[in-house]
Image (cartoon, rainbow, N blue to C red; front, side):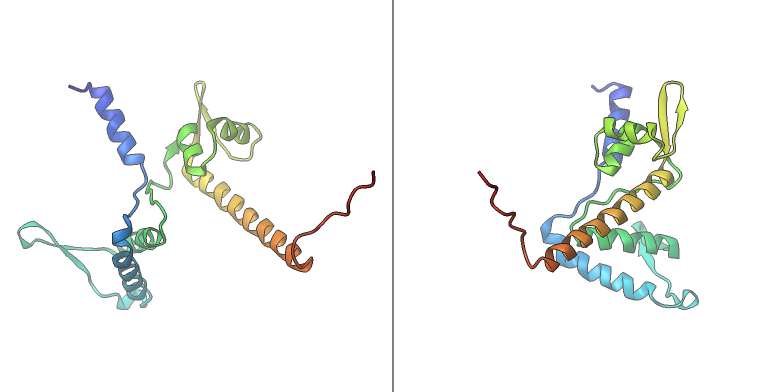
Amino acid sequence: MKSATARTRTHRNRRQAGVTAPPEQHAALVELSEALRQLLAAPHHKLPRLDLLGAADRRISLPESALRALQRSVEMLSKGYAVNIFPVHETLSTQKAADILNVSRQYLVRLLDEGKIPCTKVGRHRRIQSDDLLVFKQRRDKRRKSLLAEISRLGQEMSGYFDPPLSRR
């Protein structure tokens, strides 16, 4: 029998794990993503009411905010991405923040120490606001894309790979 601490840890890990879709669900996800995108393209005041049918034919109306979150999640799943949902104002540990950025915890701590991501200290532990982490991630990703575009442009200008001259002996 698991201890209460082990059960809590297992629940937390399951909650933090990203959700992925098996390949056989790809076509259905693409179709659902497109249907939700078209539905939400309507003006706010003309959005149709959508209901879920629950147990004992109980109808549950879906608010627009839930539909938008669902549409974005389904869109990412249909493209093969793992989806992980967490509150924007959640306080993160260094390990969880490192996992979100897909970097080592040590590298994340270096970014915090350099002031590239704001953090607070609770005793000896650093805590990061998820919205601060997402701002950093968006800036980092935007910079990466622009650098890759520049490298691609330079490669096309040079019409392929650059062959350095043979060194003299």
